[in-house]
Image (cartoon, rainbow, N blue to C red; front, top):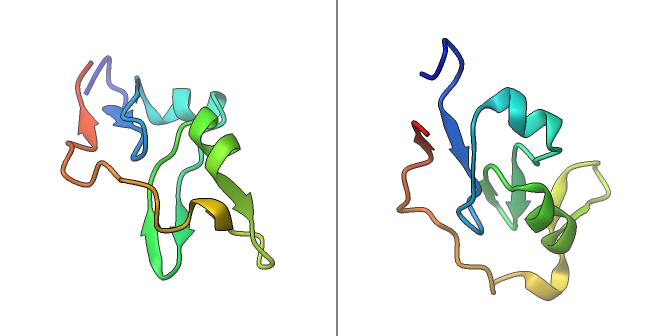
Length: 82
């Protein structure tokens, strides 16, 4: 942990790092979203604005035109020290 805070987070789509959960909240990252039955987390503001939409249940989901086309960074370390 950095300065007693949570470790850095990595956007599951583009791989950009942010220093902490607090910073991710302030930067308006999406904590989780769905593509079909799969849940993914987290997504940076830029990826969220481009690729995601709010579904009929108020949950974030991948826009129809991007479904099945996104390569997620599933093998990347989700949390790292900066």
